[in-house]
Image (cartoon, rainbow, N blue to C red):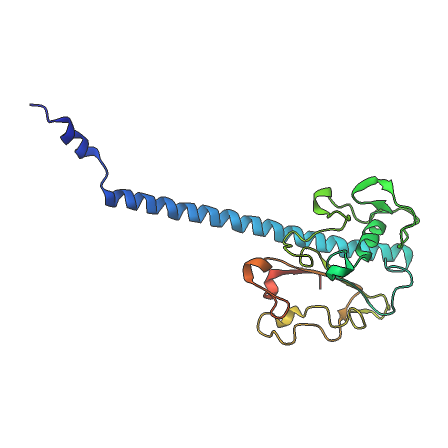
Length: 230
C-alpha cells in the first residue's frame, strides 16, 4: 500500500533547526568573503597611496636635480615649504599644489596633458615631465588625491620640502612642527610631530584607513595606517 503524499513530503522536508543552521553557515561564509574583499581593496589602496607618495617625492627630487632648485612658488616665505592637503586656502589647503603639479608634469596641465600652461608660477622651461599621473587619480584642479581621502584635507597628500637647503627637511617654518613623528605612533599622542625635521630634501605623507580607525587631528591613527616616504 502506498503512503499518502503528505507522509512522503514530510520525509524529505527540512526542519526549522536545519534551515537555521544552513542560513547561519551561509551568513558566516558571506561575511568571510566580504571581509576578504574589503581587505583586498584596502591593501590595493594602500599600495596605490605608497606608489603615488613615492612618485611625488621622486618627481620633486628630479626637478631639483635638473634645475638646482625645488619646485616652489618664487617669492615664497623663507624656510622649508609645507604643502598642506587640498588646494583651497579657505579649507586649510595650499593653492600652490596646482602650480607644483603643472611644473612636475612638464609645464602641461595634468588634466589635459596636451595643453601647455603659460605663466605658471613654478617654471619648467625645458618642459621635462617628471610625473605622469592618471586622470582618475586627480581632483578638479589636477592635484593627486589620496586614495583613502574622506575629507577636504585627508583626501590629499602632505609634503615638506627643504627649501632652505639645510639638508634637513622640516627644521624651519612653515614645515617645522607639521611632520608626523611616526616613531611615536600609537603609544604617544602628545608628541606626534617631529620637532626638528628629518634628514633629506623631500617628505610626503598621507593618512590611510583613517575613517576605519577613527583617527583625528588630536589622536592620529597608528603609524601603520599612514603612507609616508620618511
